[in-house]
Amino acid sequence: MNPQTIEEGRQAAIIAYITLIGSFAAIYMNAEKKNPYTSFHLRQAIGLNILFFAIAFIVSYFDSWMISSAFYVFFAVLWFFGLSNAFQCEHEPIPLVGDYFQKWFKSL
Image: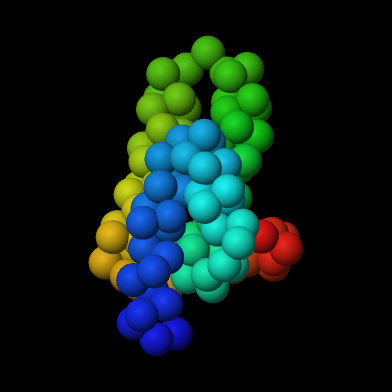
């Protein structure tokens, strides 16, 4: 991917990681041009948001602050990793689940 493509899609890629609303805003921003850098980070961010809510549903049944805090720390690390990659113009998937997000959400 050339530096010009990355620079054009960098802003939308960063916005994609800022909550689920940011992901939808980034989808709208990427609708016309379909920047591959933005699409990559969109798939990562949307997958991370969906996975967060799916696992939060399961974790909510446990009445343990240890399980809840481990859950939040795990997702904070994954979120920070993705966001820092978007800021640093890197094209690296999120550990453990990023490759799956690229396969599942390839239509974005």
